[in-house]
Amino acid sequence: IFDKDILLYCGSLLMAEINAGRIPPKTLRVSSHDLLVATNRPTNDSGYKMLKCALDRLKGVSIKTNIKTGKREQTSAFGLIESYDIIESSRV
Image (cartoon, rainbow, N blue to C red):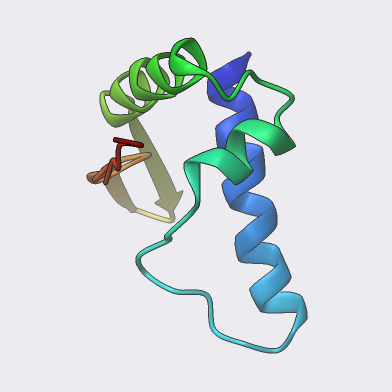
């Protein structure tokens, strides 16, 4: 369920850009803390570990689709997440 929450959160950010009349960015930058809070997840070490695991799973998801029109068929495949970077800071 957490994976779905991440997709919904990111989708809502993109829709906010569209609704504001802006072109959504090709690269979405989010605050891990804000995402965890918005999806009602813990913001401790386990919350961030769950987020990393979820991003790994989503990175591995591939969607394949085809469109048939007349005598032509086009098949396309893409991943839900092309890549992700996590920048961590410590409170030392």
